[in-house]
Image (cartoon, rainbow over all chains, first blue to last red; front, side):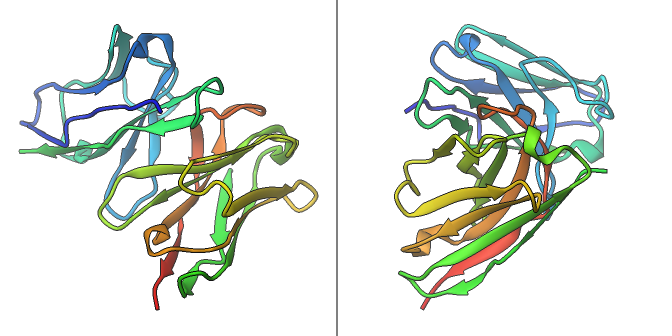
Amino acid sequence: SYVLTQPPSMSVAPGRTATIACGGSNIERKSVHWYQQKPGQAPMVVIYYDRDRPSGIPERFTGSNSGNTATLTISRVEAGDEADYYCQVCDSSSDPYVVFGGGTKLTVL
Amino acid sequence: EVQLLESGGGLVQPGGSLRLSCAASGFAFSSYAMTWVRQAPGKGLEWVSGISGSGASTYYADSVRGRFTISRDNSKNTVYLHMNSLRAEDTAVYYCAKDHSGYEPDHSDYWGHGTQVTVSS
């Protein structure tokens, strides 16, 4: 089955840039989605189809996908960005059809 | 406003059964696929099952295939997750989510608040 690999944790100072990687075999051939989950809350999509941003998500959140790595970049990090971030791929030609990465806990110093 | 309200969670003994429900409102329910995702205590997200908007196609994770059944009643704007032969490792918060697509599994653009399922003797 398809595996998505994320670093378990990372920390960044306010105002700096956080880059969260999601590794998968030839992941560039798949559409990658990113979710943010704060403690006690349901997940929320922040990037879909590699780089699209839902309404209401700040432009500070951007996504990219190339080779074997998809990336979520958060610019000018704020305290409110502290959360768990999960990457996801959905592929009806694969089994299982939907896979999540293990998640990355982002700590804002 | 899209709303998803899960219910049916609770404490059940190993080997037991439970049916989760998710009542949806605020969108054309039958036009969208629906998904169940779970999260064990202190763990990450795990996709469980999905169903197309018409209900004709269903999808399952290996960990639940043969034990869980997803279904929907478009006349009631409700999706269900029937869980049988429950195990301790099924203990989790179960989230209902609306997919972006109507047919195949896609990213989930709206989520419910989740319902707790605890499997323990």
